[in-house]
Length: 299
Image 1 (cartoon, rainbow, N blue to C red):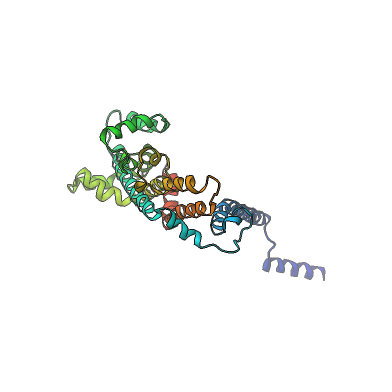
Image 2: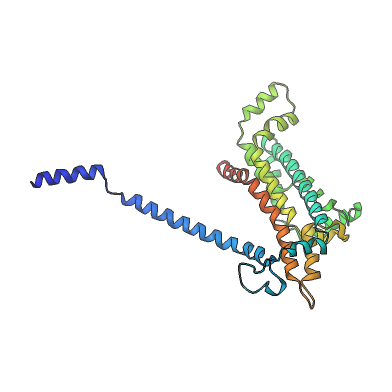
């Protein structure tokens, strides 16, 4: 009788095996990791939720600590467009951001291709010198660069906000060079055999194969230009040329100080500045993640 019982127990264990402790432990750690990830996401997202909520409140309730505005003051966004030329500032930010991102992407892609393909004496030392420029704070070159643009007659224009990117950026050059080094050199040699010039090799072989990296560089620089306040503060005096960060500073000076502070206007303008970057990030998120992962693998 006991033998039958033991045999039946073994058969049941084969049909319904006991869960492995390692698997249970792995599942537990995965649940804890996901819970931590969700918690961190909520913590990082809370300031933006508060910003949107406060921008929809009436003036007396902006800092009342409630997350749901009651009543909802949609007119705050209408008042922002009436109080300042936000549309013009938005257009200026788009123009400057696109020009800055396109110029730095093209220039850095060309320089990075030169450092990755051509082999010449002193190449590594020259590339190290390029990387050394990242150690130089922007404050050190602020006055000399301003004097250069002043001598060229571009002060109080939008040119200094993006034209400096035509000379490349050490970080983006390094990033793109890592991608180019991961490409098989035989592709370029085959293109040379077919009679392609160096420019055609870069244009028709290198660029299509590194599209993900180019998009990453574009997003990085567009974000940097979109949120840049220092350059507009230095070079722009005409309010018609303001970008959104500089315009937001003007709105803060006008409505965020003095006896009657209108913080609902300032917060509504802050939401207008922030939302386009969120949209651009979500549109390019796939390329952004692929580019970061691929760069890590090729490093």
